[in-house]
Length: 246
Image (cartoon, rainbow, N blue to C red; front, side, top):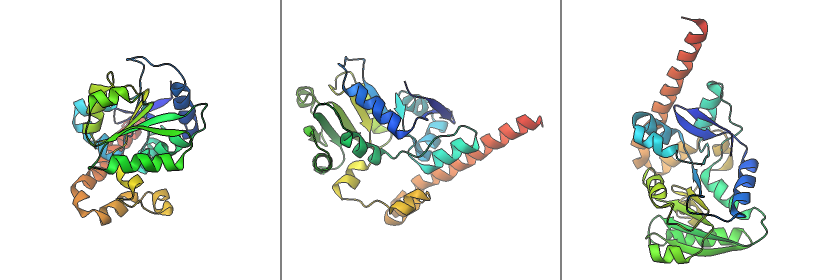
């Protein structure tokens, strides 16, 4: 069990990335049952904003066992509201660190989602950066029979929010993996079909601007960030007025 807090009603894991990785690796070393699956989601400001307006999405996100704070805005919001989170943990970085983490035996991964061919490319990239990694399943199409025969340990699902989260919750009992993680557009970055912002841009919290410049069609989606900021400000102001008894 990992420590967590809630931002606008959405659960966010507050443990450090090292502690989360240790917990997940321990999970991979244990026998799994149908109901003994570790679900990892990556809530960002856009998703939390959508969840604030839609209780079904909020309940969906809160099904996660681990909810990585994937967005500097989530970290800033937590600190402003007095619910500190150690640091941002991006989904794509966590994926790579997870497969690279030392373990006693080889791990079998699966990649499902994305455009045709992208899941296969992403799986091969993960295999290249880590030792003791085998590919059990990689496709943009869900083949239940093939998935069941794959004996995978970790399944990465890249269908985009909220489709991937719904799919994971609906199919978790029939997927053999011990760990199932929603990864959004990470397959595109891993395969080289999309470029990530430079590290310093990520550090100062402007990765969203980099993506907007490169993908102007994301403009309407990016408005969610401003909506999230407004909600956090109102929440902070309400807490201050309550303290001041105004």
